[in-house]
Image (cartoon, each protein chain N blue to C red):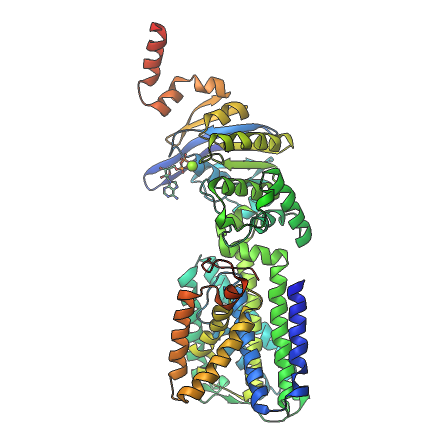
Length: 320
Length: 247
Ligand SMILES: Nc1ncnc2c1ncn2[C@@H]1O[C@H](COP(=O)(O)OP(=O)(O)O)[C@@H](O)[C@H]1O
Ligand SMILES: [Mg+2]
């Protein structure tokens, strides 16, 4: 219960922020941090709680983004109506990739490679078909109003992304306190033992992939509404996949608050490197890569591992 | 309760289990013995759905369960433990056992309460909040037993739960296993510790090179010449007989 209260307090504090902060620059950083936390929590549900490491979470993100863009541009849908459709499609892609991988018993690096391959296939497909705007991408018409999921101020976007991120965190909270979550973590730690205790390993992993895919595609929808534009590289390129796994790895994999902490730390860190080293292309990716190596080597349980104070090396931690 | 008919499986050229049939009565406590590599664990894996037999059938509670996946067989009431313990290492003892309890209890609170009761029963009560990875061998064996027990089985397959324990720990575990049977759970155990086999089991099957070579009460079986040879080597029974005649 303490973790739920902490989550609610966090939500209230962020929701109250626009009352005290009017700087668009600061609000944008908060929005982008919450957005990174959403992607991170989506990845964390499958990777951290389920032990299925994906290198291609862009496949879900891009599907959500393109679903929202195509439904608006080609079919004239309202963005709010497109949101549930995009989320459902993200879950469906999760079901497809999950069913294919887990039916054939792909685990570990094989699963990671399959997700990566799917993201790449989707990138090439979206680059090819006019339906998705091919290489040019899709621009959604600018009609700023809350009813259109295009807010005139950053505050509106802040509340929406806060809602999405809190929803993802509530799912993670539920995983920590429910039978399904217990089964998922059991599968992560030992599939044979889980099966011996009556857990349907295939179904449990499939469910986690679908939940993760749904949340990730909500992130894609948000991206499109915030930036009004999507193209194959943004949607399905490796950038988003890396962003999604970075926050939980830095913050603490398989924990409730890890993705939030990780996203905050990374954005703080990102702003610092930008102010010290300028905006040279590739610099931030290099720095992130270095950071990732350092984290995995010296702090495998992330910031949460530091905070909880128990022995630092523990495979696939789940406490906190 | 459990009927195995002509069960066979081979790995490459090795006939790990060859034409094994056995019939376990409901409410019994029985054992499966035999030298290392005899095929005992493989037989458990076949019965519980972890391996699919090449030939033969497995019937449980009157129904054919041959080839069903392990989680389905578990849900029907046959729960196994692993010889090489397989804890959820990153989780606490309490969380480990709760996974078993969740089979019949959706509520997290109820599963945790059940898990605590089961942990107490096997002597893990004061280690509830320890990580499974920090347990000693004896603790891990108890945990393996507790998880299976928490799933409320009707038939419990125990694969060498006493192996690696010292005599005192074995002495503590024997009454625990007996109490499990007394609570109405049928127990089939693979065991090397003869003291446990003798004092616990009512019936014993002996496996050697994948085939059953003897069955009966532990006393009958331990006087069987073929069994003695399987354990102590060819010619041993003959030597023992000669020695006892001279004595
Ligand atoms: N998955 C497997 N693949 C290949 N050989 C196996 C496998 N499992 C068991 N074996 C072999 O089958 C034989 C029986 O093993 P096992 O059932 O573990 O024996 P026991 O439990 O009686 O000591 C051994 O020779 C073992 O090496
Ligand atoms: Mg064995």
